[in-house]
Image 1 (tube, rainbow, N blue to C red):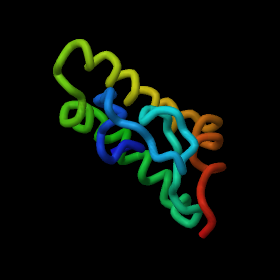
Image 2: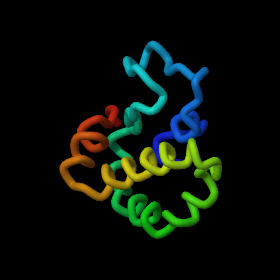
Image 3: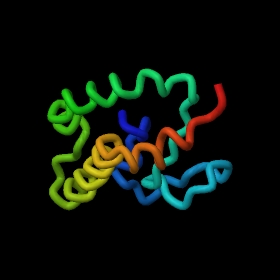
Image 4: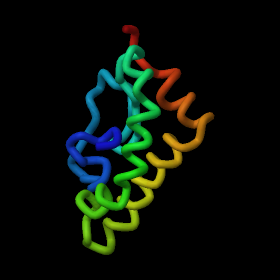
Length: 99
């Protein structure tokens, strides 16, 4: 799942708090923590995310109207990051951890 393995960002739970060690204020704030050596496969991964976007959204986005709009924006933000070279550079490529 894009940046949100436990889905607390998509659901936007009121009881979730990020680990203090991450230095982020919200579970909805993205922070890429992957290794730099995996960046060589990022173009293929992005292609897969784009190819399967509809299926991912259908499986992961809550149907409850109130939460759905927020969840859709959260997922849209992810796709904006991966599909915009400057945003990707700032949010992913430049934030990878050593090999």
